[in-house]
Every structure is written in C-alpha cells, then in structure tokens.
Length: 215
Image (cartoon, rainbow, N blue to C red):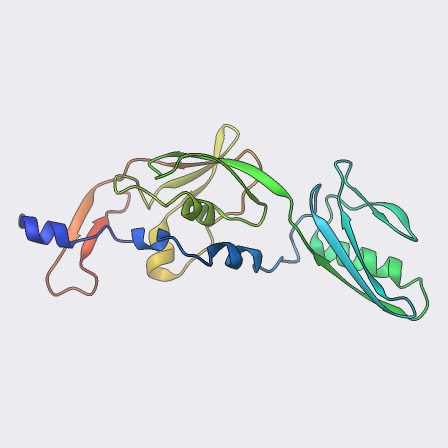
C-alpha cells in the first residue's frame, strides 16, 4: 500500500454514502409502495372498499384502537391481525352476500409508527413514519450516515435484542435487499462507528474509500 497525497484524499468519497442524497420525490415514492399480501392490518390503517353493480360507492373505514372497522350494512367487524390478503377475501365475501354487487379492497392511509435513530447518523432522534417504511428509508429521511458511521453493521433493535444487522454493501454491490427490514413501533436503528477503511485509487472501476468487511 502507499500513502495517499492530500489531493487524492480530497478527491475520494466514502463508497455508498451517495445513496442518502436527499430526493425531492422521496415522499412520493414512499406513498406509492405497493402493499404486499402479507402486510398485517392494525389500528390506524384506512381500509377502502369500492363497490359497483346494483350498489355503487366507496367506503373508507379506519381500524380503531380495538381493531375494528364499522362497515355500513354489516356493522362492526374485527379485522386487526389479518393479513392484507385475508382482509380482502373476508370483506369481499361480506359484500358478495349482496346480489349483483362486485367489490375491490385497498388500503388508504397507513398506520403510523414511531422509531428512533441513534449513533453516527446525521439527524438522530425520534421519527414518526409509516408502517411501510424500512430501516434504510428512515435512514435516508435522517440525512444518512456520517462518514465516521458504518454502512456494514447497521443494527435494528427491538426491545433488548438486535433483530437485524444490515450490510449495505450487499445492496450496493449485489442488489440484495433481504436484510432491509420493515419496522415496528418502538424499534431503534443504531449506526455504530465505521470499521477499518481502505482507499482504492488508480485504474479501478470505483475509486473510493471502502469499509472492510468483518473478519
């Protein structure tokens, strides 16, 4: 290895940190995230039922703190804990009891959760976000990781245990997103201090400062 000149050092950026450059359409992209069939419905979620045929209209119902919605014609229905797929089947079966009426079920406003960011992030603190947000999306909202923060050992803590350790290099170099977990209210995202760094310069595809992996 050789010692970098001041010019070389100033020209190098920390690999991966450009992922967190603010984007004006970030909020819009979050709103457009599709809800997967395994999404679990809970208090605060808005359920939208569209009906057409002999009866037409749109019903917007928010799940209350007891886990129920009030669906005109059918009364109070307990829906908390159902997956989105189960919810669609359940409500469609209710509507199908009305002759010559078809329906579709979607989700409107999502329930909010509160998570905290600590460690080497640019804007640490508490964040009120949607239950569809992932750890990396919340990190982006917080301005990303400081240069002295790791991209390879980002922890998602739930209670007193670490439920996920995210290595952003898996995403940046391989396109793997499996470790970018969905969050629950009360979760903490912790960014420790960066590990050993190495600079790659010269005839390489991505000249930058890289964090070495764990032994």
